[in-house]
Image (tube, rainbow, N blue to C red):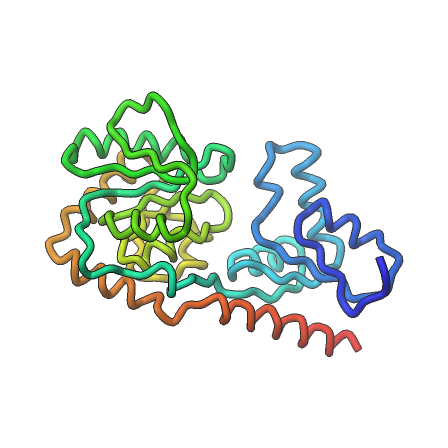
Length: 264
């Protein structure tokens, strides 16, 4: 690599290339998740963890990662807030809501898909009149009736959100983008109660529940049975209206400029 003002690693394997490069340039690490959690305890988890000891300046997706890396590795980091495309994901006041949506991808184990499906199985028995929508991946032979959307376009996803009272979005590491999108569409997200989810989302319209099928199902039930759902849905959508990816981009730009000035 040639000399530059900055070199940026974007995942743990690239961190080794940036660390060993002989060119000039301040080293940055764009950290989107805590990657040691992607593996069982072993070589890959250790290799991923060791990248946080390389002395890079971190720019992290959300505050949870910045605090975790500082506390456990002494790594200096800035963070950017999660954004949401509120021009695309928006509440349709005329929508007829009759369902619950679940973001399910088995290929990403940190999304706890199996626990979510168990919760939906319980929920379907208790609330058989509520439609269930899965997106992200197609599933066969489920023990309950469901509309299986698989991979969908963002426009189609907004339509699904607007058909649903609630959405189930689980994450065992850094939170996904899905809860913000659901909120923008007036669909109340049910999220596993974990410190990373509370820190990053920081929204009073998110419903948190312990990560057990029965309690997740109960949280979904509490949303679909809300007598004032329309009012809460509207307020939930309004709560993320100021959110944008432009704000996130400005935070990243500011972090680069400040760190590079300090390096002079």
